[in-house]
Length: 172
Image (cartoon, rainbow, N blue to C red; front, side):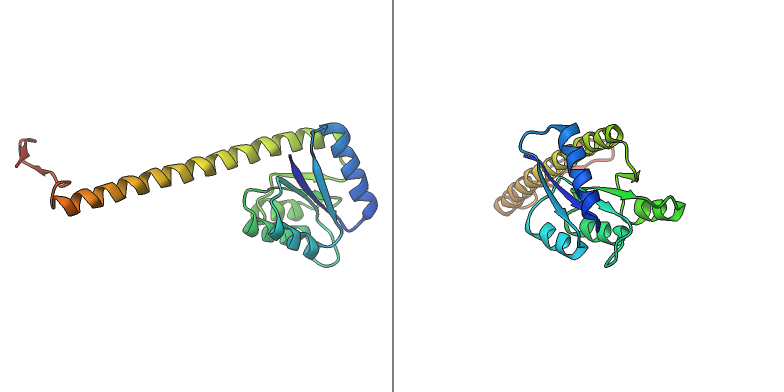
């Protein structure tokens, strides 16, 4: 099951975005939650995990960059996309540099471009989660090795230390 969060202060935009995603992606079990208020969206992010978040830039309470920065702090593996009618270079730069968005998509969007972007975003999300799982596994393995090394050192002090001679031989 995939879970998307959509944030825009305009209900018509949210409905069009939801419709575009459902029609183009056709992901079984896709759950799309929409929000008009950034604070409500942030509260929901604290309650459950989202694969993807798409946010508008210009909203009355909080701009999209600020929202996506907060989202990044709470849910770093949620892939972030900025959607905006603003064509200002500074808006895009803020989204990329401050909120580390995956893509910046202009309004009005192309349904095909949005679909490809979301497919790429989900592939990135899957890689991020796999990498995090591998890092966690490696940490557990190293932790077990360190515990075993401590146990051996307690049983036989100095057993893990090797004294090397100047010619590369082992000194006992």
